[in-house]
Amino acid sequence: MSKRKEKSKNEYRKYVTKSLSALRPVFARASLGDFSSSLRLPEKDDEFAELYAGIQIMIKVMRDQVSELDDKVLKLQKSELQIEAVLESIGEGMVATDVNGTIFLANDAALELLKTEKKSLLGKDIEKQLIIESEDGKKLPAQLRPLHQVLLRTKKITAKDYWFRRFDNTRFPAVITATPILLNGKIIGAIEIFRNLTHEHEIDKAKTEFVSLTSHELRTPLTIIRWSADMLKKEDLLNGQQLKYVERIRKVSAIMADLIQAFLNASRIELGTLSVRPQFMQIRDVIDRTVEEMRFESAEKGIRLVYKKISLPKINIDPELLRVAVQNLLSNAIKYTPKKGRVLVQYKKTKTRISMTIQDTGIGIPPDDHKKIFTRLYRASNAKRISAHGTGLGLYITKALVEKLNGKIDFISRVNKGTTFKISFPIR
Amino acid sequence: MDKKKILIVEDERDMLTTLQEALSYEGYETVGAENGKVGLKEALDAHPDLIILDLVMPEMDGMAMLNKLRKDPWGSTVPVIILTNRSNPSDAAEALDQDVYKFLVKANWSIDNVIQEVRRQLPLEK
Image (cartoon, rainbow over all chains, first blue to last red):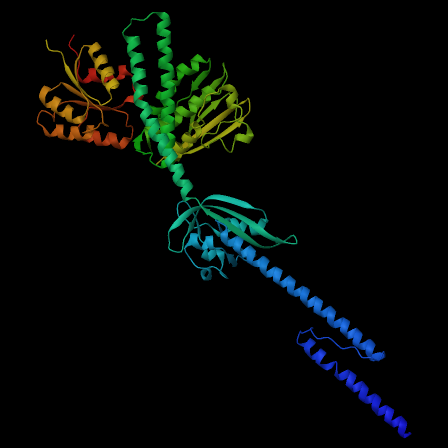
């Protein structure tokens, strides 16, 4: 090779080495995530110029992408902080678990309500750490827990009448809402949100005590009205029409007295102050008398009151509560049966139980009302058509009384055909 | 002949007059007292043949008066009918412990029922 060729080869080699070396710091920095360097483009417009330009573009693209990613991460962090702030400021307790019931989130409100710290909840099994009880203090079985049911059925559930046990062993009544956590249609966990109902319970109690107090206060003036009307009739100084007025006063005063008694009974049941005094006795003594007392009312309406008596063994029962329960059922039967209908009262006895049925040919209870008929202040949709009056307390009280007497109450009913109520008591 | 005397201890004025009028109409002599304290004094002074006693009263309530009354030799024998609107069985039990003839809840009884009970304890000689 000529000397001149040799020389240009060497120069070319030096040029390539130099051009490539200039790239080294750029790649070095890029490998560390630093895309801030820029390349000085060579003066010669050769292959290296193209290479440099390409790398320059690549570096810029990387730089832009990293910048965009940084922005996104920042936004996400901000979003996460916002969500955390929102969760922490929710007034209600919130606990979230994965599909196995392991807690991964518990907000401040939850910690405060339960009187505990995050470390006793996070990562733990909700069934073991967050105890739910029924009113009587019995721990709720796992499968009945709202969160558990939600994990199975992926539907939202709200439940009342449950109590949470705090970490200091006190407890509070709560309303619980459990919802599934869904991601792309698949369940990945569940949330339990709960609120302390102590305040609501106290308000309820105050209301009930108010009803009790008012009803009690109303009794004396009402008694004076009734007795004065009685005296008017007795002193025999009135003419026919005046006597009719007095009769009316007596009649509606008696209705008022019954209403007040119903309110008092209902409030005593609610407050748990209803006293039961069982006696070993013959229930026929009470029921025979109650049925007889109803004869006048049924006759007035042209309703046949049929009473089939059988001999019954004595049982342990409170006569007054039994009387009120039976009177309520009979009164309903007569009230909701149209003229010329029939009310049949009969008994059945087995070795262990006595049962009594009151069967009417009345308007019946619509199927939609069956579930609610024993609740306070509830009147069936067709009841209002036959009578505008009715507190809706009768069956609520009757059921509570029957259950206080250790009995059971049930009914079957068909609209416009009639209703049969059955109450039964154990023979002990 | 002396009429039979009934002491009525009742704080509600209208209730007291209603009872007094109803019993006077039947032929009894009546005396009223508006609380247990006055009632106790009246009872020990006048020695009525029967006492009708309300429970809830100011100054001294019915049970307190009854307790004190039963400590007196005459007071331990006088028949007492409690006429109240308190219908809790525990009140009845407490009263019956004090040897009360009857425990009547006003709201559940007509005036004739009340008079019947009075007559049963204190028959009028006709």
